[in-house]
Length: 575
View 1 (cartoon, rainbow, N blue to C red):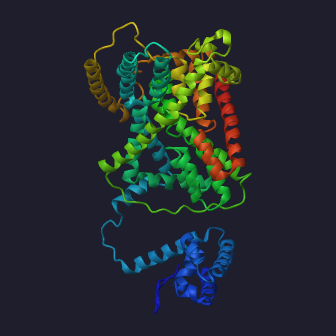
View 2 (tube, rainbow, N blue to C red; view 1 turned 30 degrees about the vertical axis):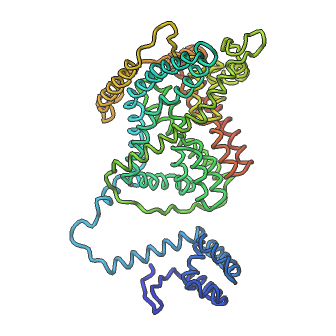
View 3 (cartoon, helix red, strand yellow; view 1 turned 90 degrees about the vertical axis):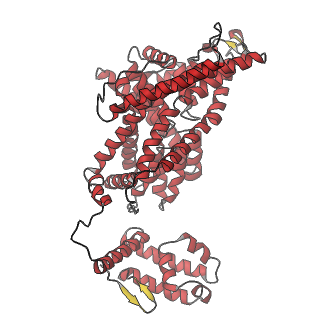
């Protein structure tokens, strides 16, 4: 371990024989160019160049002799990388922290009390090399139990508001301007409200998920989660730093793919970019929650958690295979991060994160989902053949969208779902995964329109919204004991909405009575298959067209095979 020393020119850290030799060579090279030497202290500059500081490299290019110094620095870096077998900046950081540790040992006098801080004592448990991973998984299970169960009353409330007062008001306004009862009303009610509203119902689910994650982040635990999972991933041959972009992928795949820029090695960057879409983004959560509530009402939280866990395991196993075949060649680099102290989350910080992420989802609902819903309504309003009817007056089964979806649905028959409504939702899911739910809401025609009944007065609608919210809040507080272990797996199933009843009937029919198994197969397909168009565009920009197509085609094939294994394997096992 290098010992601290002080020289006449200031504080000097000894980085070891090999690094010091290259520093001296660079020091001499820098001395040949007065413009460079007068701008920066030569030893400091040599260390920064060996750390490949991009800011210093850019500034050096503008100085006379800077290019020559950079060339020598690259040669020094290559020699040291060959000696140590890892990134030189990691080695320098390790030597620097070793020096600091040695200095602390010499200068700091410890009292007889417990030298460990509260954060250190907590880390002995939650960041333990054996217990750290089970603790992380247990916390994630609680998060998804909270997301799936405690938010359920608010889902019912939002659904009642959309299908009740909002639908009443839209129909009343259209009727007042003379557009009621025609295709314009159908566009707004069967297109916009059914599509966008079908996804907006799940805003409470996302808010509860973001709330739980924000609390974990603000408390300082998520940094420990990255540390714990880094150790696990490194043991099976994956890049330790890759877990950070993959964590971002739980929110959205697009910024997670862009986050792969932090990886220095091109192979690791491409591999991580291919694995990020397997992390269940927030857009897939409405699908999981809907199907868990329909087919697994007593085990909703466990099923949702299982989907997230399956995505992680799929990425880890696939990454292990690719790392030891196509991407074989470079040793893993270490993950260096500073662990923040634990602290009590602040209301302001938690609310900021929750609102920022929720608002991003709502903006998506009013852009991508809105446009997709309108396009989908148009396709369902156009007859496939002239003798099937006319625009906006055609049976939905005879529309262009139904005909197109029905031509593809036989490929899904071995997976347990081959109706055009289900296949069509997967087609629109290429645009955005949230659209899967909104498409089902439109194709199954689940929006209720009380055309023959007089809608309630405006003030009565407002009263129903307020009382419904109070009732949902009360039901939420009643369900909190489910999270802490009281009646953990036996909560009563929620009342089935029109959409839930229609989806259940569709899956039971197409799977010959094996609806739950077909639903599980469908959820796995949604988890694995090709990500949304925005993520595909990000892959093309960051990874190149070739790897983008590998991701698009490869994920679709893998999704089909895994869904096939789930459904057909389940039938063979008697599920």
